[in-house]
Length: 243
Image 1 (cartoon, rainbow, N blue to C red):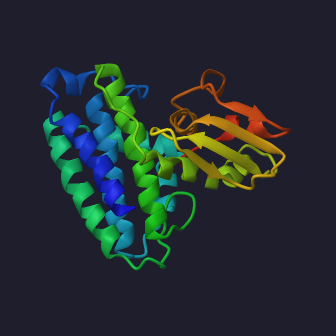
Image 2 (cartoon, rainbow, N blue to C red):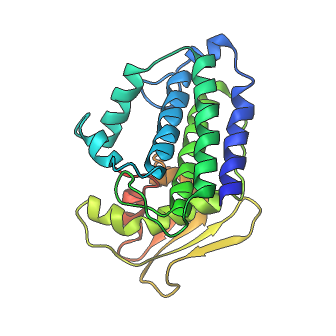
């Protein structure tokens, strides 16, 4: 898990090392944010990982809610207040992500630490960091036309999306339902999540499933096949991140 998080971050780092001044100021795929803003957000959240793993009693969910009504709005506030030039942001993120990774590797694997929606064990927290770095890498590379191929690290993102379905159903005001997912990985193998005899299922490309969960792709444009009484609803509530 931690090695895969490091690999995902290094893939993004290789992209950032190619950027020129105009690239940093360009609009990202995250509405209202430049490329520099996206990386600043990643730096801020990696710093939050270090902070929460130190277990100093600060609950980040409470802190973020104190800034705005939703987590997304709170993140926007933090970015607006700390904007800086791209190279400075890149160095801040690089230092933060290395510190966070080291802290995750050292952490007690059984101790849950405060995070946005609920306390998480270090491995699960690392999974959320893979998902966030991957999704924001798409926000950086897409508008700039830089290739960012899917890898088998998406298995972690797909697992997170499926594991979070009860949370996603409840957040949308629905009762959680069993969903079986059969997803085709980038190398052509199948990833299976959930009870195989569930009444509802989602079948198709893992990359599309992860993009729907990251809200980077609409379910109806994903090519994913949803069946059963709750399959389509599962795709519409699917999310790889906390509200």
